[in-house]
Length: 153
Image 1 (cartoon, rainbow, N blue to C red):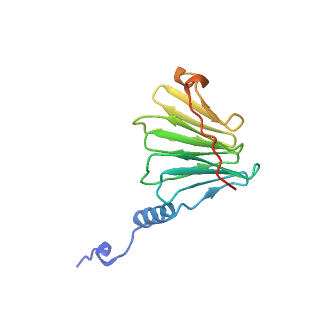
Image 2 (cartoon, rainbow, N blue to C red):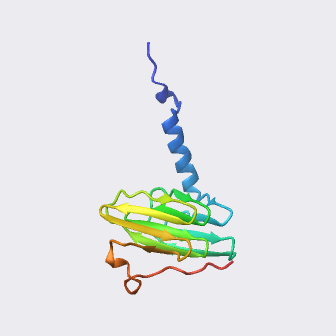
Image 3 (cartoon, one colour):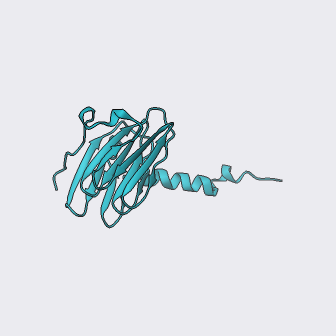
C-alpha cells in the first residue's frame, strides 16, 4: 500500500528549498559580499543597500514583493522585482530599471549587472551606479530619477 508522505508532513527537496527561501525572505536576511550588503524591510516595500566603503545605507521604496532574492558579486548586487530590476553599487547608489512584464534575469559579474529584455540590452556598472543601454534611448540622464537617499547610520 502506497502512502503519500506529503500528507504526513514530510518535505521533498523542492518543497524544503521553497520553505527555506520563504523563511529567509520573510525576515529580510541580508545578502552580502566584502564590499556591500542588500536587505529589505519586513513588509517588502523597501530595498536597502549598504556600502562597506562608505559605511552608509541607501534605500528605495519598491512595490510590495512576494519574494526578494538578491544576486550579489564583489562590487554590485541585483534584485528582480515585479516590473523592474534594481541594482546597487558599492559606491552607495541604487538604480531601478523598468522592465514591464519581463522575465529578464540579471547576470552579475564582479563590477557589472547585465540584463536582456527582448531586443534591449542593459548594463549596470559599479563605477557609475547607473543602468545604461546601447539600444534603449529612454535611459538618458535627463529622463531618469535616481535614488540616493541615505538612512541614518
